[in-house]
Image (cartoon, rainbow, N blue to C red):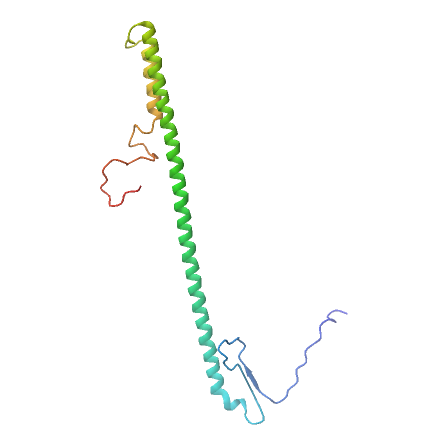
Length: 176
């Protein structure tokens, strides 16, 4: 039989009026007024209204406290996100610095290699490389390639870690 597990609630009148404020009060405020043998609820209405107002004030205080906690949590999260962003930016700057240093070192080694090749061939031939010679054309080409690769030679090049370092700045704040 459907619904057999549920016992229906039957209310019966007792002739006694009860007023209840359905909240949890932390300060021990009265939350229930009922007709008794000596007093009727009708005579306690001002006390009941005071109880409602007291509970309402308590609820407002709890809501303000919760709002304050929420704001503090949001501010903490905003500050944390800003710190994480700064850390990630610093890690990216460091990564670019290391890549630029590696590129610079590679370019330095290739320049040394170009000088070594030119000197070795000049020494073997017993004379300096002539303008327009095959050796001079190769050395010029190799040097041009390294200039394109070496980010330290062009201070205007975007994305350089050292961009702007060593030059006077008119702005009030200088990024490290």
